[in-house]
Length: 194
Image (cartoon, rainbow, N blue to C red; front, side):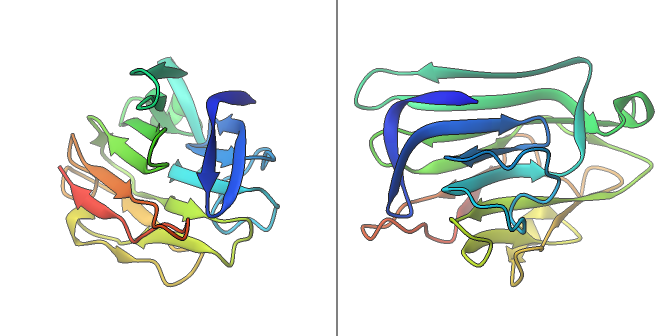
């Protein structure tokens, strides 16, 4: 459990309570507990931000940390998973290394999911990427089995992105999904950039 340094608006609800999961996601309000499918989960929460929702674990050098950067009213709350891997890291941590962040912007309530250097070899896995509202019927997520640049909007709350063999089926270093909050407090389909 983490307290956001300000109260954010997310889909019309307000909260400053977060739960950060080793499994690659953040829940707003109530915690989803240990969950590998945070967007499709039926557990109630104010919302979910899933950078790489799946069965994950830190490697021997892995860190999961958070910080606030900037000054009021333009602070950014950053949660970072560094040297993370598919569980168990003792099996996959030498061939699959993930680095990613979630950034929450104070003034706009916009959300960014950012990816650093990735290593994917030998195996392929699927992860939930996107946002969920108070229920799993309210979601904006991504779907794809190939290049992340060619992903599409998910049509199911269980849609996933594949992290696959080699550099083409993973986000390039610097990839970011930006979810902008609309005036009605919902989130737009994200923009993709590298």
